[in-house]
Image (cartoon, rainbow, N blue to C red):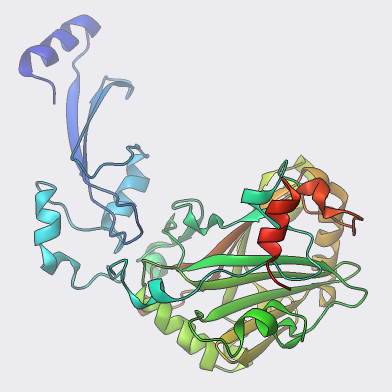
Amino acid sequence: CPSEDEEKKSIRKSGLRLQWSYWTVCPKVSSFKHQSCVVTVGSCYDAFGLVNRLYALSGSLARRIFVQPLDSLRQLVESDEHIGLVKNLDAIGNDKSSLENENLVEQSIESDKENLDYHYYMPENNYIFPQNISKDGTSCWWDSGVEEGFWNIRGKNYLEDRKKIPSTLSAMELVQQQWSFYDDPVRNIANDPASLVQKQHEGKTGRPFLVIINFMVPTIGNWVCYFAKRRGVDYERFNKMLDEFIEGDDEFRNSKFKIIPNVVEGSYFASRAIGSKPAILGTKITTEYYKGDNWFEVCVDVGSSRVAGTLMGVVKSYATSLVIDLAFLFESQSYEELPEVILGGCRIEKPLMYKCDDVLDYVKSREHLEKALGPQ
């Protein structure tokens, strides 16, 4: 913080009466492998509200520092995703009582999930590739659920104030993705003999529970996301909502499953057409649900909706320059379910809209592709 002499010099230099204000940004209750921390921020404002100086003091746990608008900052501090104000960083590890009522429970890296096998090879007939083997970013994917704050979701008091807050780390991680071309899209793809689930998952020991989101896309085939519980985190209220979703009837499921789209890169027309408004899929598109051995599938028939079909036409027209992020979640409709938690997120970059003769044109090398495919 500035000394009294420094403050006086600043006042004389500007000719205005400046006022120093200080906040302590609460540490996020994060159990991923990196940890947010307490950051004390002091901002010097002049009469016009302009920031002249910014001092940030942080402890050894600090990994990054950022400043948000005060309204957003206040929402973060007051949400259930942060520890209450503390005077020093050392208090975080000792004040266990402050964490007792938090919905995000810390888990050690040596948890049960760490002992499961999360590695899945690319499925057959697949034309989208993990980002780490992509040659130039064409038709690749990655897990965007790791981006905290990327989506705005319902806050703790949403039912009263209708305010949304930045998202936290998603509850599930994207372990594999599939973009397959079929004359007729495959319904209940998890039970298809050639599927990833049947070849690499069902009946296998040491595998995590999978949530499979299968989009049946007319004239293309299937786009499928495979999610597993994220290692290192455990949201109690999400676990409860997931259990209720799996055990509920279709009417209940149709009222809860929500998607949030976002065009990261692409034409203005595509961005306007796709938008970023959350939607409950089951009320817009015919959606079916299947439960199997250590997996649950949400099967979305895009062809059942004229609007969805039109949007897919837009995607096909602008695919070569399109980068899309999608978040999936269960809509929180009661106080006990708030604030919302993202189930999982995925990013698709410039997806192919046709079969190609040689996928080696889109990956770094044959060795990278063979390693990603594994034994088929």
